[in-house]
Length: 222
Ligand SMILES: Nc1ncnc2c1ncn2[C@@H]1O[C@H](COP(=O)(O)OP(=O)(O)OP(=O)(O)O)[C@@H](O)[C@H]1O
Ligand SMILES: [Mg+2]
Image 1 (cartoon, rainbow, N blue to C red):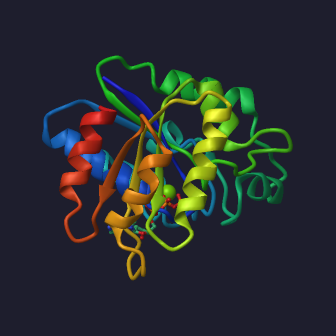
Image 2 (image 1 turned 30 degrees about the vertical axis):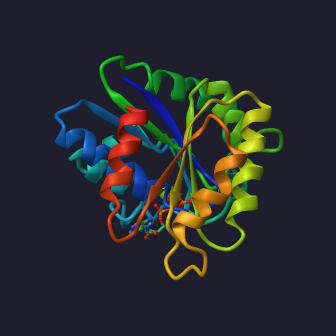
């Protein structure tokens, strides 16, 4: 079964929502699943369930206990900032080699569909010399690029794709997660992107009826 890195054109684009939807879809099919959010900023230890790791654990049917959080999200930071800034606030730094080692071990389960959620967008700094894109490339995982359908998303999406491809990262699919209230229609976003992303699957996630897109993505990424 497949392992995928869930990245996005930016923060709040729907990475966690989509990861949880995929996990629930696979579980309903009776498949083994695992998910990780190795780097998590904006984590409130008093409310662990209200975090990306808490959401992923809920989708996995597991508790947001300290041991479970340590297992899926070892680099947790309180400040709701980019990881490099959030780590610095605590006098810490993310050891890139350790992060890549953790990710490689996490996805080693051969009999499971595994998702690793990144942090923010493709080019978010992890430290002074690495971004999320370096993490993806060094982990050797194909990724799902989550994008939106807001005005401006076309350029954000193609820029993110270019950045990923420059380092040789595989792209399983681009998931266009409908932006609520956007003046740009979801279908029009896919139509416009399509000729620019030859060979890459485009999956539409419609707010009102996400299931078809989630099922298609589950088949591509599982
Ligand atoms: N397709 C969708 N249907 C309903 N709600 C959605 C959908 N996509 C995203 N959301 C909601 O939008 C908000 C942002 O989504 P989400 O937390 O998944 O983004 P993210 O990319 O994981 O953000 P971060 O960079 O903080 O990890 C959340 O409240 C989420 O539940
Ligand atoms: Mg998230």
